[in-house]
Length: 168
Image 1 (cartoon, rainbow, N blue to C red):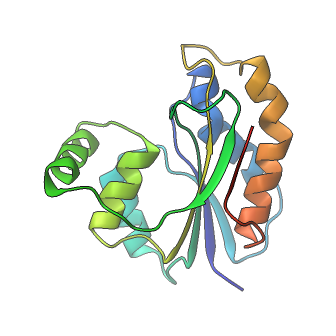
Image 2: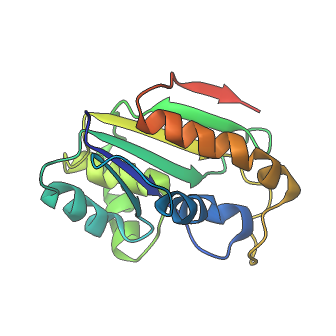
């Protein structure tokens, strides 16, 4: 059994941008095996890094869920391992500066925690391309329709059952 952390990353009340925290809130109400922990990591990457470093026993797998704009078709769900590639030193410094000022993003978390070697060896990022990340509680119709598949992808990734994919 692989000690796993399923975690959402994002801001609350930003419509589609709230996918990570809202999905985690839903998943946290479900029963999980003792080796799986479900948490919202929507706080500063420095604190997340410390949380990961302090975990005892350490997590062996990390499944991250977030809405991320990357120019894909709206509603595209991408499942990809994080391979640990870090940007140059200037970009790392910029990400640390953003982290210290409170910017919350999947990329910041991965770069900051990766730079400080705080991530487990097995990290899977599940991203959904948002349509609307303006203020509000409701998801766009596209993200609402994606919700069941997204939830299933997270469950399967937590069990180590998924290969990296991108699908609209």
